Image (tube, rainbow, N blue to C red):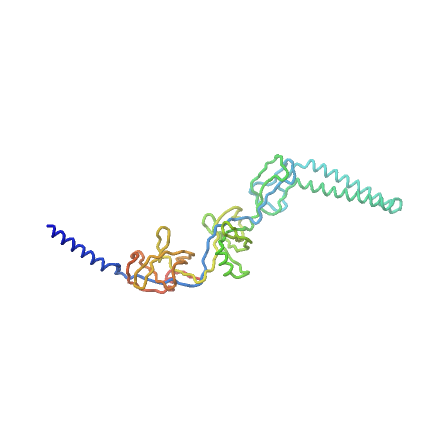
Length: 359
């Protein structure tokens, strides 16, 4: 009985070893479609987180201390340049102004009388010069009183939108105390940070004095209806982040954008000799992208990709060469190490079947 069991075990082992030798690389019966990456200069759209600022966004403050007597505007209101917004109680300044007006009028009359006498050689030229100096001093004090009187009225320095009130009617204000904030939202400045490597690529590939257009994706994931353009780049890199700030400007005729909003900027960046593959040739494992690369023996190897750009139905990648062959159709039918049969299609044909155009 033991001999029979031993013979069966040996036969089983020989049969298993034979199967292993015959199927070291499992060969699929079906024929797959294989292609190669397309290598060419192209543009890819880069996304950057951005901060949206009004072109003018200033604090309006009390120029002097006093009671806030009147408020002529409301929160959120559109105001025009020169429009009266706030008025402080002017009693003291009104009294100072009237006093200065009276003194200026007295000095003017005194000067006119002295000049009349000087013309008749009744008084000396020095006495006329003295009364003229008194008149000039009185007029200067009048101008000063008018300036102080102007401190009681706070007018809009430009067209804009009112923010919330920081003081209410009747409040006792200190000099320099904030009243509200005024924003000019007719145009918006949008700031976004660009890494050093991408900045260098941009500067070496873009044409000087060319108008670089950008798109703005708002917080609701919809695109702002107006196209912006790159306006300026800051002078210095941030040593902590390795980024440099770009500024784009967008028209805002409908007033949709407000100061302090956030979003994403999409900017086209040129890439030289880009490696481009169809997205459908890739698969994902644990948030990493892979393709199956076919070697000279028709064996497929799972290869990780670095996605550096994305276009409709296409990826721009690192990790492949233009001469590599990748499985295009049938990636769910194969596993790493399988031997396959395939038909090859050119990169141009593979991409043209996707109905996309690579610039």
